[in-house]
Length: 117
Image: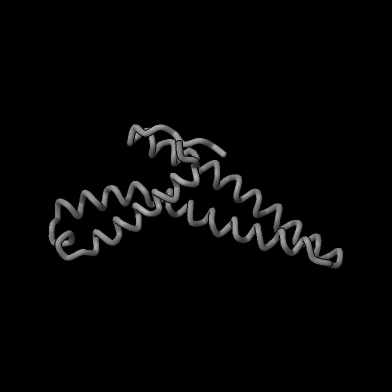
């Protein structure tokens, strides 16, 4: 069974595919198909947006943790530690929101929930 990260990656990939499909002339001229794809994409907007933010925060966390490994004066070390705490808090809230959004998405699609790692 896929983990949450794998599922989020596949949702992001589908979102990008939908954007590409909707830009095709044969789709954009077919109102019914365009609306169908638009509804599907709209259902993914929040998940993809949160997932992309999660990736940015994860990179920032890595960078901030790397700073802690350097020789810093006390004031700078405190600033870095405060930034790390803020990023960890944001990431926790975002992961909770992502997990709930993913759960709702899966319920709508009647899929098994991925493993939490």
